[in-house]
Image (cartoon, rainbow, N blue to C red; front, top):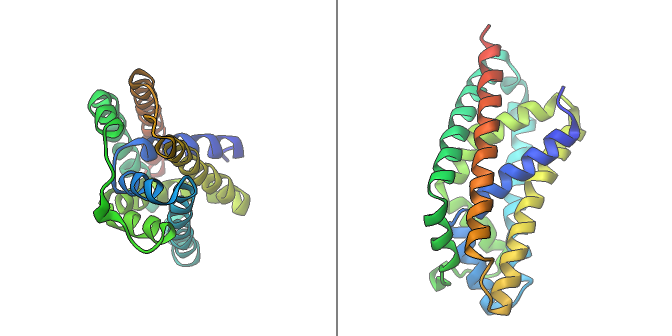
Length: 214
């Protein structure tokens, strides 16, 4: 049974890895903060969190028994582990380009909708990688967390969503004050470090999945 500390910390790192990569939520956050101030960032995360809580409830309510089967856990483990390995390697390899893209990204007014909470929901749905993440890595984490019951799910989800809140609060503060998010070398180092962590977790998930077929 995985420890609650393991669930929380690894979920935080994996969530941070995804949050740091440029995407529609980042663009919308900068845009909304420039119009509404710092509070828009956390409110966008709130919309994102509402959507993910709904999905998590659906998983627990209807798919819990199915995803805990050994065969399903094996498929999720191998699939999620493989995706993590690919994502981690790509993240570390393209860290410089990703940093340049994110640090020089400007607000996109086309992402504006009626309120930052709704913005968080819609931009998450608009990102195809969000669905892929929950169909593989997210479900795999839910399977592992369910071994520790409800408290395990809380540990996983709190770590996951707090990483979004931490990063987008930093982005919001920087955008609201007109400063760059962080120095380029620091950003690159963070992305590379997160990529290496993803690779390590990918190996863990992959090997755990293979054991389910034994």
